[in-house]
Structures are given as structure tokens and as C-alpha cells.
Length: 468
Image 1: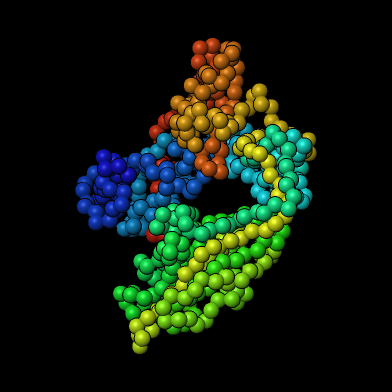
Image 2 (image 1 turned 135 degrees about the horizontal axis):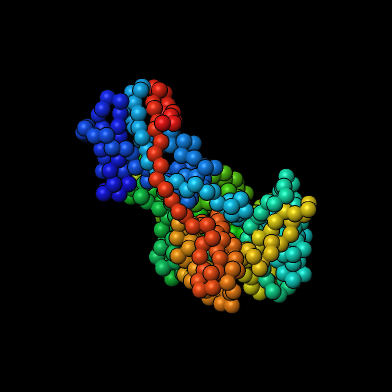
């Protein structure tokens, strides 16, 4: 809450509490005498994606009494049984039209499995004239939403190519090719995740006779009792069209004291702490030396393994170093990595380019049909570019969309109506209706708000709404 907003609570004892900082709300309170009510403004703290959280007001279909008791329980931590609170809030007496409420939904994004079901093998992650949205999307929606009812809407996001796929035969496909030579002294610069869960020491780069390698060791660590846990994790590799890719890398081992490295593969890592993901240990399938010289060793191939078991997935590979100093000889194993490669030779099917599209479908008469674009317009990628925004907040939709409507529908006539569907988040959309009055576009259902006040009484366990 902004520092210039005060919340004042009337309790049954007659003691009122005031707070200026949201972070300190109802903590270290100073009692004052007053009969003022609470002014509720924290719509952003309501359950995510509920209409009051998005619209910043309550309504007959979504009344304040369904939300404010939980909010009060989290805010008033010192209430006694019988305490009362009167809360004022913004209210709109007319709910949004049913169709507009239905259009507040998550985007149905097509994924790899969807494209694969359309094309079979080989496939591309896009629709084309031969596999048209008009023919394929109703089929996909029917499979995804078997319980759809008359009047349901679905916004579908997909990639579209105006040209058909091209297949090149017997070509080398590199899913990952890393020699670290372009890393400019920082592994992070080439897209790898470089993490340590125990210390600040991470994998680093060193040049040997002009050849750059990734290195990890516990030598010189400030705490000799500390066990290292350093992860070097590749960028995501898309093996959705792979058949049997091969994985290989070069490794050198020096100052050997113990075997400290693991080679891992994950199909569910999405960044952050790697220990929260599932990793398959493939270390034993490689030829990694378990002894070495008392100085730097020679770089050699660790062998090659097949990753056919991961075909159709998106994966990361990781090199995990878990080691510490041998205190008797004051050294630890050093590992050097180079020439990390995941590739295969086979047929490669691609499209030259693809654009992001959003289509609106409605369930009518037992099937999904494209909604009338003359009455409902779904903003496309080019529209967001022209507006210089990625998403549009519902509260500012009218301000943003009226200039867009003037430009997009320059030939509009008086009385023309348009429903505009727009993104409010990366995977979320909403909609508003606009009417042209002969001069400009206006939101058909303006947000004319009134202020209402509810009374709540604390029974010792929870806050209860009491109509005055």
C-alpha cells in the first residue's frame, strides 16, 4: 500500500489502529481513537485471475463478502471475538456481459505433441496451407475439450508458415555444439546455466595453447572441509524431431584424488536449483578416467552414447562436480571439458519461417467453428508491435485500444460494434466491447463505479459478513 494511504479499523473496544506501510500492516500498531472505516484497495492481493483481482472492483456475481473475510484474516492479526470492521470498496452494479466473461481465459497454446498429431513423422512445429488452421484446429480442440458446452470460447495460439516444409536428407543436425571458444571468459555468455549450491565457486574457463576449456576443481577453496556442488548445465535442446542423436564430449583429468564428476540428463529442468528436477545419471556410459597425473592431463574423447530414449523431448545435459580437497596432499581432482556435442545425421524437415497467430473458436452445434472476425477481433503479434506493448492491463484497455480502433477500422460507421480480445499476460486474455458513435470509439460497458461498505464481525475464528 502506498505511504499516503491509511487504513483505520474500528474494533469493538473502540481502539483503532493505523498503518502507513504495507510491509508493516497491523504490526507494531499505535492505537488511536476514531470511527473511520477501512478503505480496501489491495485488489492485487485477491486470488489470482479472479475478476475482482483483474478488474479492481467487486460486482453482484463476485461480491466482496466472498473475498474480504480471508483478506481481513491476513491483515488483522490481533482481533478478539466480537471485533467489527467496516470495509469500503469499489463496486459495479452491472456485471460484464456473459460472452466477455467467457473470453477471460488462458490461451490454448499448441505444443510439440499437437503438431506431431497433425503431421505424423516427420513434422514441423507450425501449421501451413496444407495443414490449415481451419481444418486442424477444430479437431485438436475437440480432443482437448471433450466436455465443451454450447457457447464456449477458446483462444488458440499457434505458429503458421505460409510455405510448406522442406526436407533435406542425410544432413548433419547439431542440437548442441560447444567448444567454449566464443564464451569470452564467461561460460554464462554462451547460454549455459553455471550454478553452485554450496559456494560462490562455479565452472570457469581457461585457455591452453589457444584452446578454451571449461574447468572445475576444489583446489584453493577457502574452506577445505567444504564439499563442492557445481553444476554446468546446457541450454535446452529440442529433440522433438530427433531419431537417435549421439552425445559426446572431450575430458581431461588432472591432480586426481577421487572421482568427483557426474554426467546427467533432464527432461524437466526449467532453470533455478537443479536439485529440484529429475536427472538421469549416464556417467557410467562414458569413459571418464578414475585416475590421473599429478598435474594437468591430456584431453581425450569420453566416448559417445545414444540419446534415442529422449527423442521427442526437450532436454538439458549437466556436468556436476561434487568434490573437496584431500587435506593430506592438499589437492583435488581437476576436470577440463571441451567439444561437447549432441548431433545426428538424418532427414531434417523445417519451414523457412513462421509467425505467431491467435484465433478464436466457439463451440456451436457440437463442433468448434471460427468466431466471426467481423464482430470479434483478436489482437495479433503485429498489433502488439504497433502498440509497443506485450500485454494490456484491463484497467487501461480503453486508453490503449481506442487509438488502435481508429487506425484499424478507419471506415467505421456510426453504431458499429467490435469486441477486442487482448492479452493481459503471456498466457492470459480478456476482452472488451467498443461502439463507434460516429466520431470515436467508446467502451460499450464503461466502468461506472460506486463505493459500498460492508460490516464484518470476528467470531474468534473467522470474519463473517453482517448486513447492516
